[in-house]
Amino acid sequence: MSTTLELAIDLLQRQSNTPLDAGCQELMISRLEPLGFKIERMRFGDVDNFYARRGTAAPFLVFAGHTDVVPTGPLDKWHTPPFEPTIKDGMLYARGAADMKTSLAAFITSIEAFVAENPNHQGSIGLLITSDEEGIAVNGTVKVVEALKARGELIDYCIVGEPTSNKKVGDMIKNGRRGSLSGNLVVKGIQGHIAYPHLVKNPIHLVAPAIKDMVETVWDNGNEYFPPTSWQISNMNGGTGATNVVPGEVEILFNFRFCPELDGAGSTEQNLRSRVHAILDKHELEYTLEWEYSPPYITPRGNLVEAISGAIEQAYGVTPELSTTGGTSDGRFIADICKQVIEFGPLNATIHKLNECVGVTDIEPLKQTYQLTMEKLLK
Image (cartoon, rainbow, N blue to C red):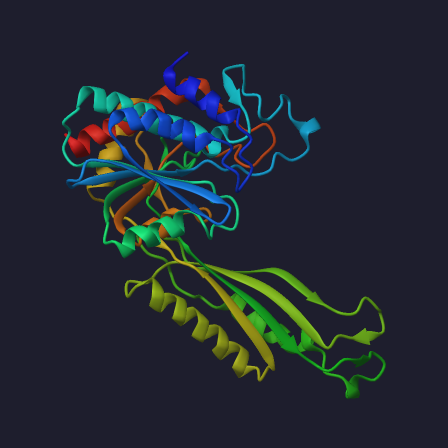
């Protein structure tokens, strides 16, 4: 059994349901301290985080990830207990196997191997680990990044160990993520008896033309790295439950997954907000609208993308493609202090599902990928 597999199993045995860490970080720290890493434990609220650094020089390469996992779901639907890592038919089963404790184990063993071979390597190596990625993500990576930014500590390269591979391990790198802009729209009407339409204003009828306009709007055409911006309604609620009452208001929850324009993510966000308000105002609606924003990030081809792409080809024999699809990750926070952020890790086919798993033979090449990337950037 490889050292990476052994460490992964040790981490997977710990029931670190978000935001709990369950001792995962202390296990990782115990492996880093003998290598000369300076450790900063950063606890915010009920969330454990740690930041570790070896060296003071540039370039500075950081591995980032999370120890928390999502709930297991019904235990009787698992083939094996989710916190009793089990190898069966070449697969390692456990909650967090793909998302993302195997990556965490590979971070540690790749660093151990690299430092053993290159004790006087160039630059610096770091880790930024949280237990608040799968939850509300307010006391985790974002707080650590704020602390580093406040003291002027910047990062040159960051690898987030999220499960990015699609059909085979190594086939996809995430070099960015779309922005997310959510709206909570409440359209006002006048409630009343359905038999007296002249005495009511049905907010569902009133907002329907505006919805049609937003569905038919081409927000942008995408660019080299991002697909076109999409607008989708996730929830729509109105009515009293009675069949003879016109509702007084309708609530609509919607979301943009957006492509950042060339003039920057912030102005793209404002542009989308303004266009939505313009459509609503055109239809003379009485409404309230609250917004929630998550920033995008993008890492163009450069030193980090080329280094890890070459490492993947060596370790897995696969040429990866760049992608910005999928949901959000902590990369969006780290990009505030790091110009080159990418995500790479195991297959994502079973993440958050029952019987989450990774291929045992994929684990050691993951460690090799991270180690080869360090050799390309820090030797």
